[in-house]
Image (cartoon, rainbow, N blue to C red):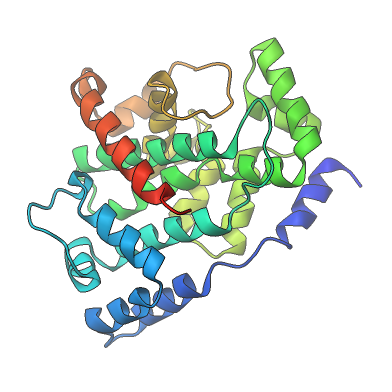
Length: 284
């Protein structure tokens, strides 16, 4: 059995999304569901409720008043944003983290991923995208394929990281050569299994493809692509990649960000990342 077939087979063993997330998702699809009813379902999971409220009160979402109930969080943030935060919280509970590589620890990879989510959402807000709720989740999930490799192909992935480091080449190139599949492709397949939104699947699959037509068409993909680079420049967490490429100019043009955008927003990015990371990792 080759490495690609082996890892794809392992996806079938990965737990389905937690009951709390699937229950809330189904409830939100009901035409006459009330925020109070959704809040009641979420509140049954005390850990998730606590984290949602803490995150909702972050300056990250820009609310001046205190969000002290799940109902208020749903009212202010909207169904999709709350659902995506709940999904993020749920994934931190069920995703692998038991195995550690000396070159890449899951907690450092989560830190990097959360920072990319924060940066991507800040970009989404800056360009005025009305569907901004997709940005944070897409960023948080973009490297989930690496977590799968670490958990299910620990020895093989240690070799991949070693080759990438010694030769100063992108991890994706070594993954494709040694394993027959990249973390981006693997993450997208997991997202498909979990029936996540199309834009999330597309972002996971294409977040390294700076020249793809898709990145030019879909802002969340472009935002995560840029966010990944900025996160590594700021050393927020660690992705395992030994090199940082200059972003493709067409992607930068797609977002129409000012030249000094990240210089002006550096402090905001770091503070929001530190706050969100702390909130999500409490009692993981």
